[in-house]
Length: 106
View (tube, rainbow, N blue to C red):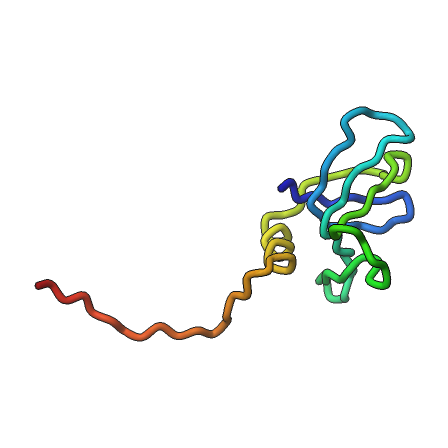
């Protein structure tokens, strides 16, 4: 899994599991798996939302021609962690309290 921010020529910034094309050229395609759109929410914060939520993407991936990609960069570690949390099928509880247990030897 290679998590990247892909900036499209349209100005959209997409956070995704990215695969580079095997060769370079205007007809080659990048594969964006589980793409989420990065949106500013105000006060210097950002949010993540489904990219093209009204589509029926096969295997949660989309192919983008190289000519539509402005640049690709690594996300900050906090953003990467949020992406992994948002796209994981594992549900992690919040506010879980653990009882105070003692280990007793025999």
